[in-house]
Image (cartoon, rainbow, N blue to C red; front, side, top):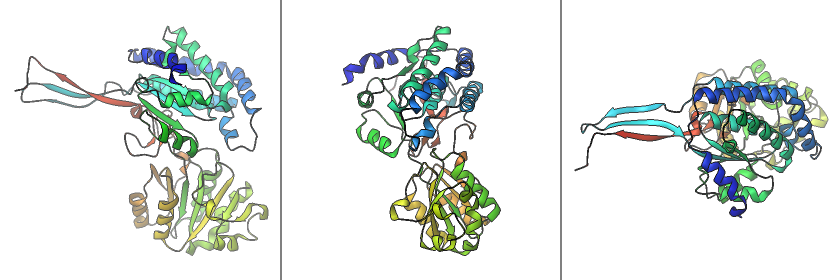
Length: 415
């Protein structure tokens, strides 16, 4: 299996480790942003070929969709990455030992970064931009759903690289077939780290089968807890934004938890959701309260499987709890360690929530929609890590680097 794709891996490995001046890197990214805008019609045409093959009701449809506005946003993020200071060469620590050895700890690229992702053509731009900025080579394995979109994007990237006389193998797009994914999972000696982006099923497959070290970017099963001390006006706006801003992304709200003392505010908290036709799967108490105060066609009885589900659609669950502690336990049981929020004006509850909830990002009185590399000032992101080794949360430039120890001597030998 591996030998069928060996040329891709060998060329990528050969392209890694080459030093490109920061000024050149930034100019390439600036030119790529301009090229993306200039090629908007081409990108939309190719993207439509992919969209024509997918059911509009598929949760991945929105993620797959490119629009002129989204391409503009992508270009802005590429330019943001170009404007950021490179982390390469940053000295973590520096010291001279009693024997005269001068030791520094310096930030360096990871090497060859493989990324497996599904119907998200924007990822192709994001991964290249971040990897190129940090001196990494990227091997991209997009899903077959985005075949035409990804081919169009990689062709634009390679045209820009060629215009600067840079080895185009710093960015490699593998064929769309599944066999290419299996080969990438086994590409030890060629690929230094592998990052999956997509469904829980994809992430688990990569984790369970990869022989290459993996940084997990887990599914986002996201909760917002409206506390007994929450502000209803703030809450209604935050809940609506977290759920409906863009339902197909991993930071979208999946389960609203409400303290039972605030049942009278429940219709207000979900009013905007009703106006946007969000289907709510409510527990028995919440269903009773909302009956007659929420669109009938959008109010449903919750089943056990509705909790702990990443909906990626205009659907969510609703849980009423009798205590603050019960809310924390619900999040602990069903959360995916991605993003969790509390809406409260009580300082003690807020601090307890921040300290006890185990997630990559925890929020107070704000929408979880902000869990995003650009929103965190990272320029863009290569993924949102839900693990604790190496990186956690939105992964930007620094998270695509490691470090080495540089030891300078003058003839020292160890006794």
